[in-house]
Image (cartoon, rainbow, N blue to C red; front, side):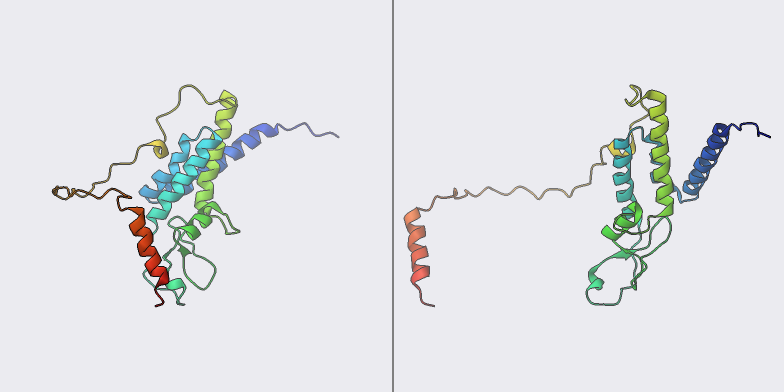
Length: 197
C-alpha cells in the first residue's frame, strides 16, 4: 500500500520561520546597546552588505567588551588586554581568562583561526545571510533600486571634539632644506670619518 505524498515545502517553510524566530529571540535577549548592533543585519541585501556589517559589528562589539582588571600570570601576557565576549561571556580555553583585545575577540566573533565562533554572533550573521537570500529571491541577483534607510555602517562618524589649537606665535623664518652648501656637509662628514675615536 502506497502512502500519499507529503508536501514537505510547507514543513520546511515552517521550520525555517521557527529557526528565524529563535535566532531573533537570542538577539533580543541581549542588552539594548548590543542588540542594536546585532539587529543591523536587517539592512543586509547583498553579500557585500553582510561583509560590511560583519566588520562594523565586530568593531562595535570589541569596543563594548569590558577589559579584565585581573592581570594574567606570566610576564609576556601582562601587556595584553583581555576581555570576555560581551555576547556569550565566553573566554579562551587556555590558562588565561578572556580573549586578547582586539585580535582574539575578533577571531572568536568571526570563528576564524579554529576558535569556536560566538553562538550569538553566529545567529545574527545567519539572519543576515537569510535576509540576503530572501532579497535575491525577491529581486533577482541585482539590488533593488529602492532600499531601506542607509545602514549604520555607512553613516559618517560623529565629529570628534578636538582640542583647541594653541595661540598663534610669530613665525620664525625656517631655513630651507638643503640651504647649507654641500661642501660644508662633505667637509663635516669627512672629519667624522677621519676621526679615530
